[in-house]
Image (tube, rainbow, N blue to C red; front, side, top):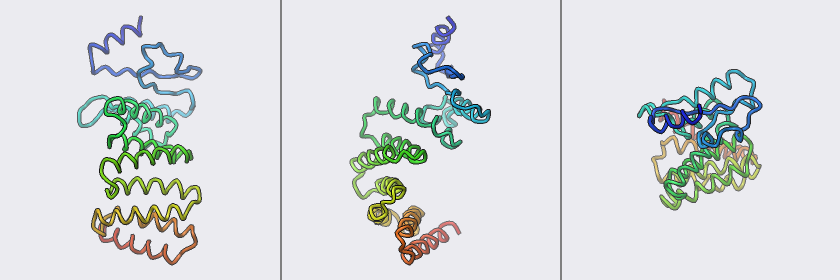
Length: 230
């Protein structure tokens, strides 16, 4: 009766935010069917009090621009910022599912969500999943903007992080040089995006043992950053 009452109230009042909270020894399947469509906060996998508070705080987030309850992507962003990656992923994945149902799978917003999911997988060490998400984001952005767009360069930078972690340094170097070329053509040589590409190239060629080239890249990145930021 309590569940039915709150569901009926939520239908009448869009400001009412329903957040199921899973306590220890409770599984998502234990929720009443009418509550399973709502994003639940899982407190089962941690005994840390601060982690529990961060998860609850993230679920209560409000969009500062509209005053509306934050959507799944915003909650995922807050959880990722807190370092709670295991809990972040389901929110991003649900946001992706909802977005694909609304706008299809070839929209720039889909590419952005794929990148966010890829970053979480990368930080968790799931390299295969991260490569898959970054590759899909790259394909979507290339189709939308063309192969020489700055967003394509950003996707290439993400992919090279996967290859660098695997020790595939030559593959990473070739892709980063392509990303650097795109970035230089898209912005002035003083842009911080160029400096980011140069920093990434520094890391790769240093791991390849080419310290002379690494130093050259890093010095150029330092000059750009100093010019931009002082």
